[in-house]
Image 1: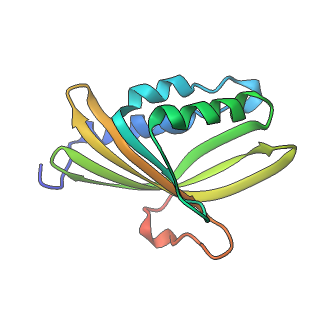
Image 2 (image 1 turned 180 degrees about the vertical axis):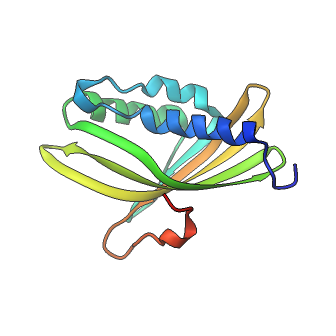
Image 3 (image 1 turned 135 degrees about the horizontal axis):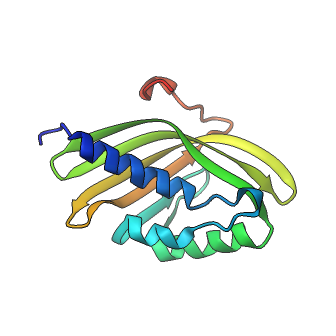
Length: 153
């Protein structure tokens, strides 16, 4: 598999990414499914948030717990993230996905909607494709997303 993936590989990664984004959803009072994230990542995966300022790095557990509080204590309600466009490159038993995503909700009583970019690194394991690392940045003053890097919607 030098760079080409099977339809099954592409479908499996699509499903993992969809589950990843859906795990944070608390629209309409739904409980986010953050515990499902553990199934999507390899042990010792790296999570990197680099949205202006100093980058934040964590493992999966340290990533989940603060978000659980934020999504269940009323601070962030009607939250939803969804992938808008993506490109996945395969090389043997590894893959990388670059995706444009949108998130919206009400944070501390203030509605918001923004877009960002996530990159997800995947490895094929005996259990299937799993996330080895994820990093993201969101649009803001000084950073506009170059849409030419993504397949059309």
